[in-house]
Length: 235
Image (cartoon, rainbow, N blue to C red; front, side, top):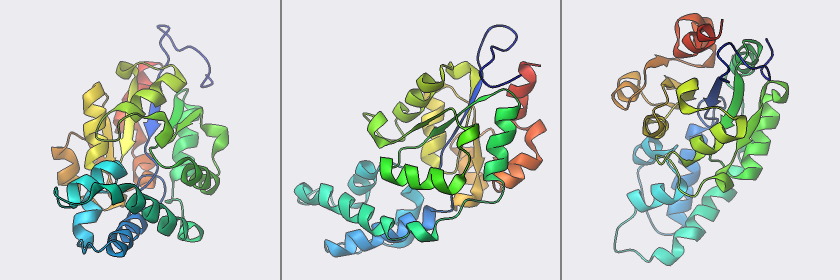
């Protein structure tokens, strides 16, 4: 059954993937980019504090880490600085082992596949090129598709709409606490991966139903995962 076919019961099923830190090894590059951006504006924020918040929307990350009584007129410039510093790391970006094969296997199993990313559009296009998996991706979102950033569920809702799938018929895969919280807000089972640098215990506490080391680990254990259960539902 191809991904465009209607499964038994007439309900289309889908899997949503975060990209940064989930399919692409970029979490620490975002961390150092935020660190550099903050320093450019006179803020010395520990990298460990930044890393935990990577995956949260940039506006929320800045607001969480910087003093409440700051001059907020500089926030947009700080975010632009992060974007510029991160862009300098594009040549270093790599897909995690198994990322492309995981997308391919979900597609082959009849699931609609969406990249539920809140990255800037130009960053998303770079990462899609690195994944080299367009044949297995039905839709992709970027920051322009969400009014509110994670942990608000807007970007997941946009991805579901793009592939015409209801929350009850979807699974989300992400690497950050904010991914788990966004999925929970829509009642979508969330699968966590620790390759973004957040521990399994923290991801489970945030709501992950399964946790794996990486896309390759999830692919090896796909049959027993929440994605496997979704695949079996249509067989």
